[in-house]
Image 1 (tube, rainbow, N blue to C red):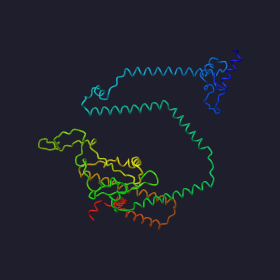
Image 2 (cartoon, rainbow, N blue to C red):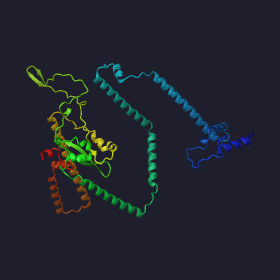
Image 3 (cartoon, rainbow, N blue to C red):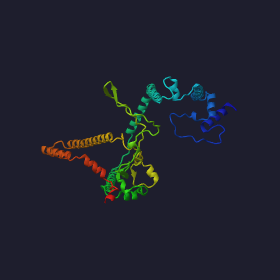
Image 4 (cartoon, rainbow, N blue to C red):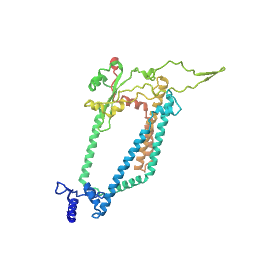
Length: 420
């Protein structure tokens, strides 16, 4: 084969296909990118021929040779790194946290409190190490974050400067009409749904629950003093009607009269002395508070459930039902009535204060809007507004508001049937 025939054959292979190919012509891509190279899309045999004959395409041969050397060298580095890590792993002897705690020379196998502090210290040191390493990597590669921020700013500016499609006045008018119609429909739906719950202490709870959930209705008894409460909720519009069963009669619970950790073996211990005698004088001793972290806690498992449930899967996957069913019965519950009552009074006072603060903030925002709209007000109007504000403040009654909210959308008690 002479030189001219070989050059023609290589040119034919570079432009129309590979060597010894069954296809007469290769379907080449019409679009191309800056980072793509025509010679990188060749086969390995074609690339080897280009490297062996650098006088035909000098720059292509140079680039292909560099790429081949880099591939080979990267493979060597990866294999060396793998072998070194594997050799290091063979020499490492892994120990459990308890073994590390004993080897440190500061503890024994039975010292659980010391082991707890040791593991907490290990976790804290590991977390501080991660923060320091992340800060070090960020400082070492800070140019990457700056470059990424510059690229993002340029991309945002490009999208902002990109001409937006013009919308005709007919389309804008139709969108406004559609929005008005949707708001009207949403308001009508909300008014209809809220009108269904505007009843207070009316209806037999057993009969109502029999229509919603017949399986649980048979567990209610007239002597339980139970009632059903309805509320609107959900994360989408229109809202969903939820119901929950409440009881006003006392419920027997282990946490109410015997709070403790039932997973541990309890041994009777004599009560500790609260006074210390020194001569003829007695001094009061301050005792350490008892740890209540592992005490028994009752879960209600009686959350808000949807009234309109089509199947069991919808009831199990409802987000509101999941969130309310796993709540603890009461925070900081105490078995004694005195501290428990004090805590409830504090919560009620705090709730009252937050309610008043929200009301005053809303009224202040309304006054600012009115002043911004109409700055020129007469003195008579100011006096009238002051009188209205005084009447509004005097008419506030948090207890009445709370009672109305509790009784709104709730049925009568089941024991009302026995009384009547």
